[in-house]
Image (spheres, helix red, strand yellow):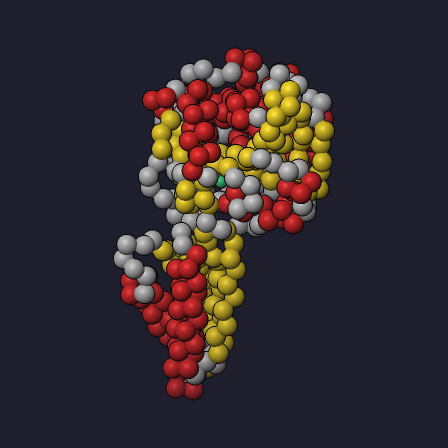
Length: 383
Ligand code: ZN
């Protein structure tokens, strides 16, 4: 695998950096230690750096020796609220917080590319290294955009990537066009009337209301969404009750919608509201919906998807780089950046076999020089 040889030379350093991040994971918007280390390393390698963009975000700027385009490269830095169960020597020291999505590796790969390019400035154009906070549903990309990321650092193209624990190291896939789902998170608060459980007629029971509501919400995908389209609507939390003999006053349902088509998403939001209002009337209770549009649909630029794949294939070999047809119902807030600047986002396979977000997730560190090489070659090729 033609990993850039200089990156291969310092790949032990990348492993050290990644293990340190892994041992000290930080939740979204709290990446204080991580962004401090990122900033220090970028400064050490002679990059111009900017901190506090989107609270804990960091941007590094590196000019090549020749004029050319400005290429943005983005990595995410945040961890998840999960108690790690890997038994690794460098397992998380922060109770209840874990790098279970491998963002520690993304940050490290981008640092690797910055180090290499700082030593090899014979490229055209400018590289913008974007270290983003809070990818896991906390709006880190939007926060950086609100801090005028692309007004301050205008990019011609942007690229991002994600590790993918397929068990196969270095398999790169990319889905041109619509690739990953948009996502809403919602809470539905049923405000009813509690009573003694032996006197149910004196109550307005929020649990019965919730059961009926959940069943009816499930008709939206089966009866309002065309069967050829993809929508996920899942209730993932029910909170109510404190005792065997009490009918509670309240019940809160929470969940998520995943979609690939903005018009269909609007239809689903409208149907949720109609059904909620109908059930509220039927059970004579009050129901409030708090819906948040968290992730946009991720759309890869068609042309740049193929360009990114070409660059990746120089690192992993043509036989390991392919176009993917399937949509991913997961979400990724790099979508917000791709809404502003054309670019692409690929997945890189590695030897890990447990799913992302699993408390036993183990990253195959051999992916580090591969990702760093792809990032670096994007600048050398596209700049
Ligand atoms: Zn992730």
